[in-house]
Image (cartoon, rainbow, N blue to C red; front, top):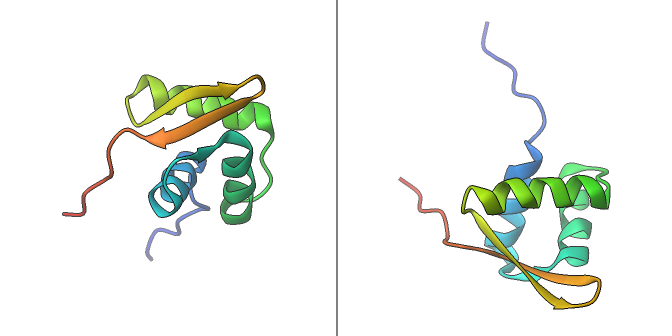
Length: 79
């Protein structure tokens, strides 16, 4: 019997949205990730973005008070 995969990990959903759309704001990213992954709070998104930023996958920069820009550091290459 084969292994049954669960839902997509939320970090992967974030990376896939950024690969498809390019750099975006944190609020727009949350909407897109919720469409692909399901319900997610802004707090959960921030925690995941922090992990992805520390590991060098994304870069988060401040645009203005209360709004941030999120972008991939480099695009994943398929092998």
